[in-house]
Image 1 (tube, one colour):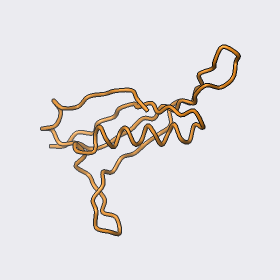
Image 2: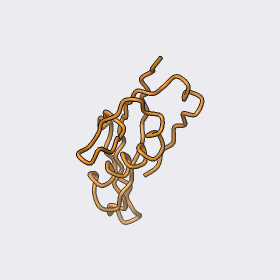
Image 3: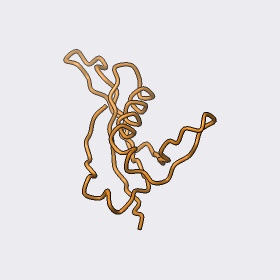
Image 4: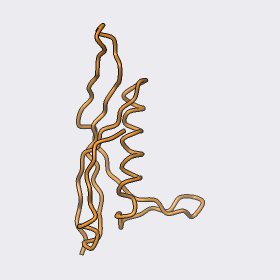
Length: 95
């Protein structure tokens, strides 16, 4: 039996929302790739997890002078996982 898992992850960057989104995806890959049962194979024959992502929110952190300190991008990540991995699922916000 498979379950669709949906999580939100936040990435942070001092440079852009795009880099913050990339950090969020990287975090999702590190945290949940071993739980994905739906995979694709790249040109080198290497399997990688199949995620669906959607941008939920862009926001900024400002310093005391009102300058942008960091960009934050929150993504909704959906993936198929095996029922036996349900107890190992952990949701964390990082970037």
